[in-house]
Length: 277
Figure 1 (cartoon, rainbow, N blue to C red):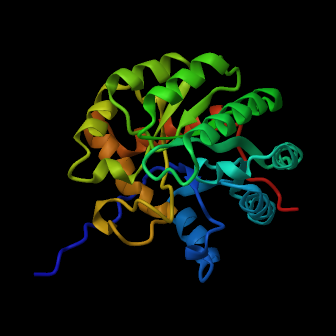
Figure 2 (figure 1 turned 135 degrees about the vertical axis):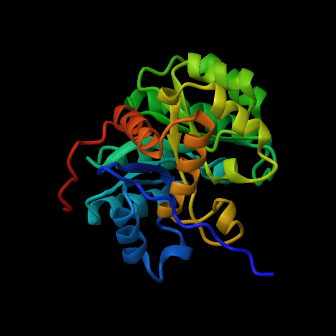
């Protein structure tokens, strides 16, 4: 029997959401990027932060932010690409970060699930970039996959982070959530929260204050349950937002209001859309 896909949740009363973590430069979006961005805006996902994962993707992220009035960018080197985190590359990212539509530094961190780069290389690249982000006074966007202890230790040793930051695609338990929030970081909730096996994440959502949460797609990856395994895109984040509302026993509009305010506060997003250059 064909599975029925529930309709996309509807934002009312001019509520809006921010997709704080998407990879708009990736090939999956190239056939219809204009339509993806326009459809997101039509459904209330009015701003998108596109994420750099190495120097070329950071350059593309900035170019996209330069082109679309509702897109902003971050720059950084992902742990998968930690071998590329040379002094020259970090200098290039520091220069790129001066662009007016760059709002954060990352995606940086540790990934012990894939380990495309050796752990010692990942640790050095992460530490170097945490220091750089502090120098640049940019919020950090942190990738933590099966590396909770080492991520925690590095954040403790390099911190505090006056510009704060976010634990992207948060996957830890309540104890880690509490520590990260106490250190000034936000927790970003992806479509994973809608998966059947995500009980621990749903419990974190229930217990962490809404003022500490952000929403993200991590598109084109991690589409929420109704579209699991298919291409993710910003408008589908509304399924995640609705789940958060259900878990917090509040309205979709309240989740949109709070998480948007959090995103604006963290990334210093302007109240009005910027002018493309």
